[in-house]
Length: 167
Image: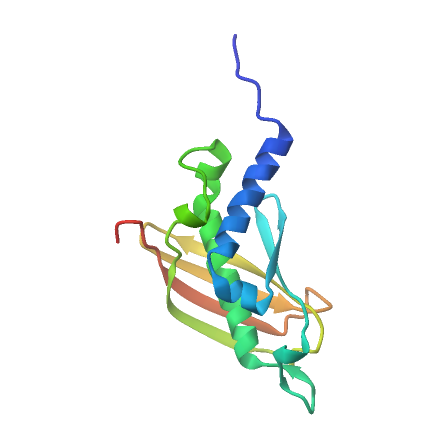
């Protein structure tokens, strides 16, 4: 029985990192906010490093609601895109993903945010869960926290239109 040997782990990790870097690099606003993504297997955690210019109310001080909303939405879009690319990426199918060869990102249909408590002047983290993903539509839930994962300061639910290259 002849079996092809599995790919070396470092090749798989390099491919995953390249895909994530291309996805994140394809959205300039993610760089403007300073959002980074920590990858563990197929799970992504978004990190919004604290900066003074993210403060909306300096008297509290509290993170700006728009910065929080943008953080949640970009987390949902990148995690959804990551989940859609996962199978082909793992098989090594298709052309390599780079800024010139990015898939079209999902388009937001609606995005509802619940501000549960004040966002404090410190780093924030978020994870998204794809609830449903079909050929044209996806539903995603996102939670953001700061010091304690079980105490989110904001959460959101969004619906996205999945578009192909020819749409």
